[in-house]
Image (tube, rainbow, N blue to C red; front, side):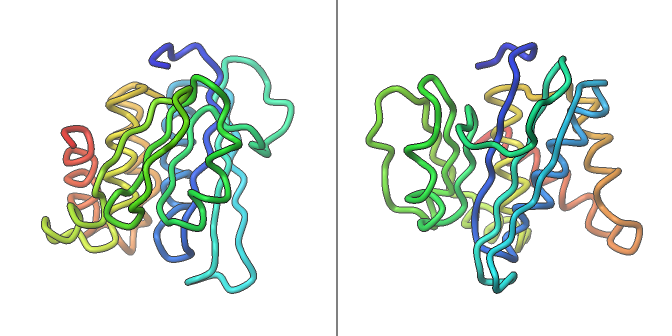
Length: 181
C-alpha cells in the first residue's frame, strides 16, 4: 500500500464530535499540497454531535470519477458502530486503522492489513483531548505515506483555523505520537 501513485479511496468513520471530517480534510489537503487530484465528501448522521459522521477522501494522479467511497482501500474506524458497518466493504489488500481504545473487536478478515492504535487513550495521556483523530492520521501517514511530510505539515497549518491557532502545536504533537504508535 505504500505506493503513493496508487489511487487512495479512504473512508473515515466515527461519532460526530470525534473530528472525523477534520481528519479527512487534513488528509485531502495533504494530497492537494502534493498536487494530486483530491475529493473530500462529508456525510453526517441526523444528530450531528453524537450521531454518526463519515467522510470519503480520494487522492489520485488522475481525475476522480466519483467522490463517494463505497469500497475503500483505506478505512479508519473511530467507533464500534462504524467498524461494524464498513469493515466488510474494505477491498482486499486494503489497510484498516482502528482506535483500539474504543473498539474492542479485531478484524476477522485475513485479506486486509489492520493496525490497532489506542488513539483516544494516547490523546488523553498526552493532554490532547480530542486529538485521537490526528493521532490516527499520523499512524496512517507512517504506514502508507498518503502525501509528503512537507505536505502534511502544510495541510495541518491550512486546516487549523486562525481562531484555533493555539491548537497548532497540539495537532503537530498528535501527528508525531501517531507516527510512532
